[in-house]
Image 1: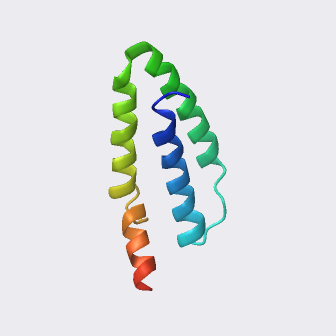
Image 2: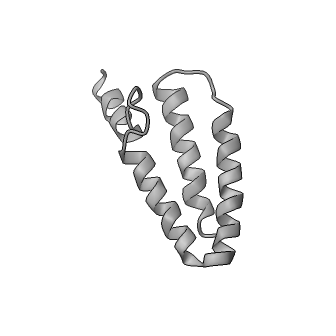
Image 3: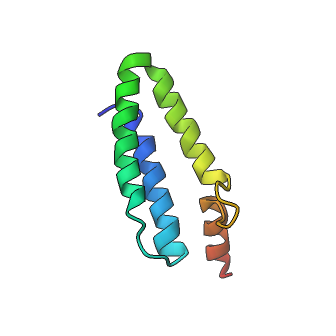
Length: 87
């Protein structure tokens, strides 16, 4: 398994976890498909450029966790804090 695979799979799990468990939406099947495709592409990129691909994967993990990518949905960290506060 490539070093970038773990962070990419974590991105998919965090995104699905927020949508399904916290926001109570149905499963958006585009997320696991996109996660699988991204993991394969990052593993290939890791063979081409080395550890840079793993660093970009970890940067993407931090970005997806902490930053709102859709203005209508909170970031996963923000959603988790609101969920734990009972709001």
